[in-house]
Amino acid sequence: MDSLTPNDTVHPAFDPRPHAVVIGAGLGGLAAAIRLGARGYRVTILERLGAPGGRASVFRQDGFTFDAGPTILTAPFLLEELWRLCGRSMADDLTLVPVSPFYRIRFDDGSVFDCSGDPAAMRAEVAKFSPADVDGYERFMRLSETTCRIGFQQLGDVPFGSIRDMARVTPDLLRLGGLRSVYSLVSRFIEDERLRIVFSFHPLLIGGNPFTASAIYTLIPYLERRWGVHFAMGGTGQVVTGLARLIQDRQGNTIRYHADVDRILLAHGRVNAVRLTSGETVPADIVVSNADSAWTYGKLLPPEARRRWTDRKLKRTDYSMGLFLWYFGTDRRYEDVAHHTILLGPRYRGLLRDIFTRKVLARDFSLYLHRPTATDRSLAPPGCDAFYVLSPVPNLCGDTDWRTTAEPYRQAIAEHLSATVLPDLQARVISSRLMTPLDFQDRLCAWQGSAFGMEPVLLQSAWFRPHNRSEDVPGLYLVGAGTHPGAGVPGVLSSAKVLDRVVPHAAAL
Image (cartoon, rainbow, N blue to C red; front, side):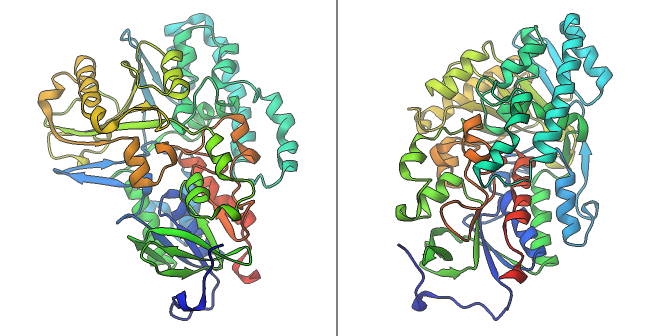
């Protein structure tokens, strides 16, 4: 078993505080570092890339600013807590603005549904499609409110370290329909197929298939109504920059870039250091991994240290879909296009089966189109628009060769956008960049190129997910999309909040 020897040790300048090493400067790692710093630890973040953010990093080219990943911010109080832990107000460093509509959903027939936080407007939108479903929609939202209160507000930052924790919440899960899928539960309340899609698509935002994701994720519609959907002026990258500044300037801790972790080292079965690909070792009293949980167990720990998360178990686990992203800038503005637009293709169930089960790249697609310049013009040159378009695709367990498929797939998406919401698009693009599941694997160390870690099905949630306090290795903790409670910005920030309950205060070490 790998361990640190005295000859390998790199001694930092003397600091009596226990040392916490955080692997990865994604949103989960940054939030974890702040919480650990507030609990008395000296913290070093080791980030393999040249800037913070991970999936929430930023691309800048040709005068455009593109957020690489998350663009939807909900439950902003989770961010506000991090600023308060550092003695500051988030408003001092970051401006969040509400976005309305939350999403504009465009069906293949051209009909449009605007999702918002206004109950009366939502009733009117539902009635526009199916007056008979208004009452069912109201009953569904009451269930969503209850599910959000229990599943997010009460349990989102509670660790599931033992099967007893799971047993304690099982009655609530059963009562809330947790054994059903999101789509199945929505269908109990709503008859119109288009409305069933509107109120069941949310698991796709966290890597789940609405036809298999546990109905506990019906909490998302009420979460959005309760706290709204927000955008950070300057882009999500401004959130990352603000968190990194808190760690370095307010707490006096360290972020090291181009520091690629090769192995978590153990002594007597417990974490005691990490080794970088350069050969340097960094001693640690505890290690918090914001790397993909499967990558953490499968690549950073030796097999003999893993009793639960063995190679066999990692291979048998189901992982989320992959993502194809095209970032592009145009030399004109498309004022009629909302900040967040979802363009649904001709199929729903069949397309999701192709992506999640058959793992084949279909000829049709459904898309998420992000136009941040609808809210913040500074992200593009004057008179221009910045976009990214996202298509859910199979992860790398399929046989798609993205080295040859990426450009034809981009062209097909461009033709579709030009024919629907972005006329004359192909003649207007002046900046372009692609990201495929291969990039998620090679750049972000995402297992199987999955964009959201382990798929959020019932038997891969809560206690069944990799625990925030490693069940295999003492002194190792996990944050991010691959651990409890799961993907999405609120889930990732909540995973760091769990550390307050499972990591001892530095004074106790």
